[in-house]
Amino acid sequence: MRALVIHEGGRLVVEDRPVPEPAADQVLVRVTGAGINRADLLQRAGYYPAPPGAPPDIPGLEFAGVVEAVGSAVTHPCPGDRVMGIVAGGGQAEYVATAASHCARVPETLDIVEAGGVPEAFITAHDAMVVQGGLMTGQTVLVHAVASGVGTATLQLAQCLGATVVGTSRSKDKLERCVEMGLDHPVLAPSGFDPAALAGEITAAGGPVDVTVDLLGGPYLGVDVAAAGHKGRIVMVGLIAGARAELDMGMLLHKRLVVRGTVLRARPSDEKADATHLFEGQVVPLLARGTIRPVIDAVVPLAEAERAYDQVATDRTFGKVVLDLR
Image (tube, rainbow, N blue to C red; front, side, top):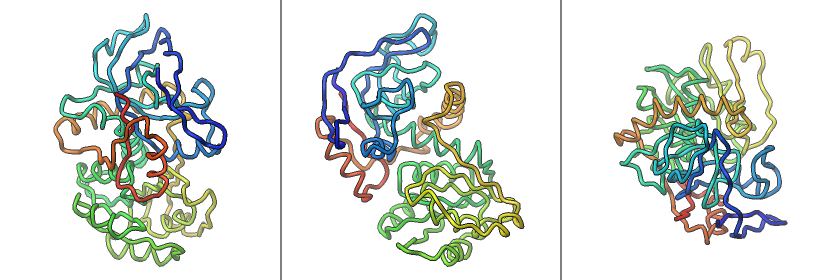
């Protein structure tokens, strides 16, 4: 099979690798589309090695495709079924073997290649905002990097829940596109911002925040605490802006805030299965009806993966970039 392989120095090469054999509880999927995520860029740079059991040099945390074969203990899905899911690595190859419980169906209304950009974004968004953040109808959610893949997924899911959405971005153009998608309150976050000032803009626009989905980390955590309302929930998803922050802990105590960190890649298999099950039950029907949709910036052939990675690294993309493995 063709697979994207990370070589020394971060060079990306398409190579032939053996087709994996599915274990008893696994399925073998012929991959059609695989999204590129920030974690893939970090792995390429040598900062985010694959966990044990995942291919150490084949990136890819999500996939969509058609089930080719199933293990002896698998009753569902079946060969020929269209599925998508999350993996700890190896998704950017023509075939991937993964736990059957980590697969969700791909609706017939969804393009099978573009579906490769759905699982990581929408499972992360749903798990962070709904499952861990406990967002309820009528509340306010703050999304940093709202124009990213996870950001646009969070925006759409929040709208379905009847929440008010405040979104930040460093790009005015991206914010305008998010407004076209229904973003209630766009807030520009310039480089070198003052956390207290940015928090003031956020609360002036949308009021105290009930749930924050922070995809950036660093100084944005100080913004989250300052903008949060009483008993607000802050869910840290990414650390693109840095792994350290200064906090007003008095404000943290006074507001009785909850700050949680989350990650999908390193979770135990049963927890990934739970997140996938909730995604299939609560999010996939919305995708099937077209109520929400993946926001795809570009679909790029596997042979041009280097260009696709560079495109994501520029931070000029809106939504996801997906590799086409057909």
